[in-house]
Every structure is written in structure tokens, then in C-alpha cells.
Amino acid sequence: MTSPDAFRTAMSAFASGVTVVTTMDEGGKPYGFTATSFCSVSLSPPLLLVCLAQSARCYPVFASCGRFAVSMLRDGQDEVALRFADTRADKFGAGVATQTPAGLPIVDSALCGIECSIQDRYDAGDHMLLLGRVDWVHFHSGDPLIYFNRAFHRLGSVRS
Image 1: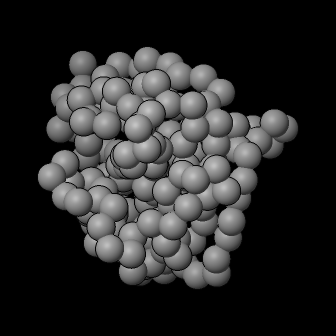
Image 2 (image 1 turned 90 degrees about the horizontal axis):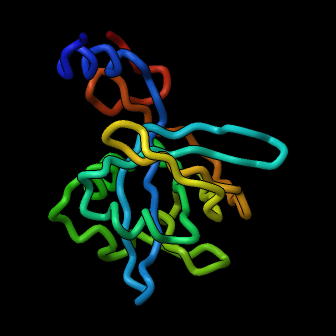
């Protein structure tokens, strides 16, 4: 069986975009996390998939929410990605979030904001897979934030 460290090293060789996934609890408090485990699933209906560790502090909120939003981060939003990856940070501090039409927080000036309703949830090892039906999208121009070999990169600057 492959060791966790060997698997992490192998996965670090896969370049991906960086997203911040957000929702709100029943009391209106926002929650969010940084994710690179994100992909489109279907065009008809429009579905996407994002993965969340069951050990995450925000896991209980995402395990019961009816909606979530995804912000695709742009080049230069490294600090936002790190803020939402940090368990202690004030993730929604000054100027980080704006709102979707349904009132969910998304990262201000992200490359793309997507609002989803929960289609389904699946347990997968130590993660939960969130399958979302896309209800709204908003685009800005720019280049994506790329994560490769355990570091952030600019598109076109990735080197092994």
C-alpha cells in the first residue's frame, strides 16, 4: 500500500487551479475553506464537485448546508488562499467577500464565482464529496492562481 507521504508527493505533481468554497450556517455565519480538489462533472445539468476533509472545522456546516459557492482565485490572491486554508484566521475580514444573488459569500474580485445548490453528498475515505448543481456564475477577466509542487504559481511560470 502507498504511504500518505508518497501519495501527497504524487498529487503535488498535478497542477490545479485554487478555489475558496463558502457557505453560511443557519444563523447566517459564513464558513469557508481553500480547495484544489474541484472539477466540473456535467454540462446538462451543470454540476460540479468539490472535496472537503472530514477533519475540517467547517465540515459540520457543509455536511448540512443546502447551498455553497465556489470562488476561482486569480493570480495574486495567494494570501486569500492561505487565509481560507488556515484554521485560525479571520477568513471573512476586511474586503474579502461579496455576495451571490442568494446571499452566499464569494471572494471579491475572484476570477469566477459560482453558486450551487446541493445535489448530493458522498463519503469518500477521509473526505466528503459535495456535488453541486450550478445556479449562477459570474466571471472577471484575468489569470488563474495555480497550485503545483506545493506552491502557488503564475500561469506560464510553472517549473518542476
